[in-house]
Image 1: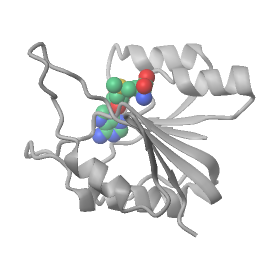
Image 2: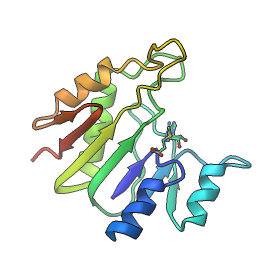
Image 3: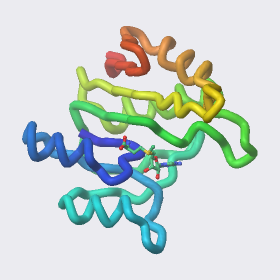
Length: 151
Ligand SMILES: C[S@@+](CC[C@H](N)C(=O)[O-])C[C@H]1O[C@@H](n2cnc3c(N)ncnc32)[C@H](O)[C@@H]1O
């Protein structure tokens, strides 16, 4: 599997050690004193350094996976502060389908409500949900979304 926005790679570590599934993470380049990278290294996980941005090509990993995950991503906003549009999310999903997943593979997304103290959402999920709904066969369970790679 490939985990996009992997943080300290807890999901990949669990996949590898409990389920014997090899997992590669993708996350922002390491910063000085970066705890997530240190933890990932201590757990023996591999992270590819890359910033996910609208319409920018995702890194070539030289192989394909059964599952791609995006769990609690923080790449909702563009440099100008606006939220990603449904078309921009759709482009990322399309790249993941065509470049990372085997036929029959699945993209799993869990969006993070990330409530502020007053209960309001930090993120506007309308467009990411719209992009998911455009994928044929997509399913939703609470804030988990599952998208099969289109045939
Ligand atoms: C809330 S954490 C979730 C980490 C992990 N998926 C988990 O559930 O434990 C969000 C992660 O997304 C990463 N991230 C934020 N913006 C990113 C971007 N533009 N490209 C790649 N990763 C990004 C952060 O560095 C952070 O590790």
